[in-house]
Image (cartoon, rainbow, N blue to C red):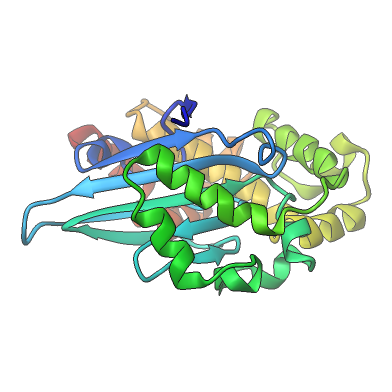
Length: 271
C-alpha cells in the first residue's frame, strides 16, 4: 500500500478558510520522488452535503499551473488571473496537481502564457484518454489511490528537468519573503536581471507578468492577515503593499475577494 506524506493544510488563497473547514476536507500530499522536480503538491477537496444544501467556495489562484481531476471538468488549468468560485453540492471529490513555478514549461513545450486564463484537455499534453484518465482518479478507493492514478497520467509526458526552474524558484522566493518588494524594478534589482529579461522569463515560464505576481502575492498577504481578524490599519497596510492610496487597494481587494477589506475581516470573525 502506498503511504502518502501530507503537508499542512493550506489557508492561503482560500477565502474565509474557517467557514470552509466546516464544509469540506482539504488535504495536501507530497508527490513521489520522480515527480517532485515538477509537482509542488497534490491537493484534494472532499465534501458531503445534505440534499438541497450548497456551498460556494471562492479561491484566489496564484502563479501555478494545475492539472485537475473533477467530474466532467477534468483539465489542465493555466494561470487564472481572477478569483475562482466553485459550488459544492451533494458528495464529491476533486484532486489537483499544483506544478512548481516554471516546471510546466517542459510539459507544454510552449510559452506558459499561451494558456493563461485557459483550460486544456489532458490529452493535449499527456498521452491518455481523457475520460479514462478522469475515471481512474475519481474511482480510486482512497486518497492514496487517487494520487497514484493521477501520478500515472503525469508520467506519460515527463520531460527532462529544466535548470531554468531553479532561477524561477529563487525569484519567486524573493517576492514571497521580501515584502518590501512592491515594484518590478525593485525585483529586477534584487535578482540582478533587467526588467525586460524578467518580463520575458515570466511570460515564457510563469504565464503572468512580474507586476501581476508581485501584486497577487501582496493581496494574498493582506487576505491572510484579515482572515485572522488582525487589528490592522488599512491605510497603513495599503501603503505597505505598494498602493498609491487605500482606495486603490480596496478596489483591487474587493475585485479579487468579493468584498472590501473591512467587510472581509468582519465576515471571517463571524464564521
